[in-house]
Length: 82
Image (cartoon, rainbow, N blue to C red; front, side):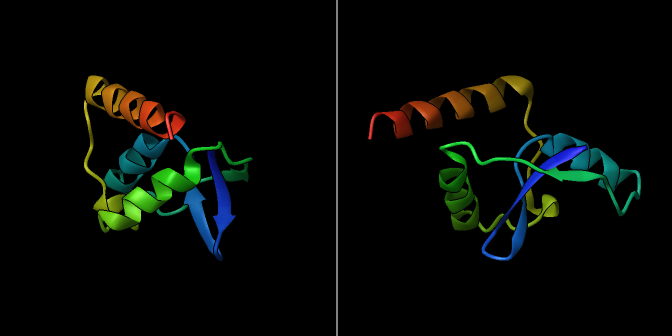
C-alpha cells in the first residue's frame, strides 16, 4: 500500500514512489493507498517537485539508492538549518 495525503485537493504520494514506477511499467493502473500524516518536510519536497515540473510519477526520474539517500540527506539538512 502507498501512503498518501490530500493536499490542495490532490492526492500526494508520501513514500514508495518506486513501487508506483514499477506498477506503471507493468501496466497496473490502480494501487491500494492509505491516508498518512505529513512529515514536517513533505510540503518542502512538494514545492521543489512542482518547481521542477514533477506532477506525476511519469515525470520522475528513477535514482540509484545512493543518489536518493544523498539528496534526501542534503534537503533535510538544508531545511533543518533554516
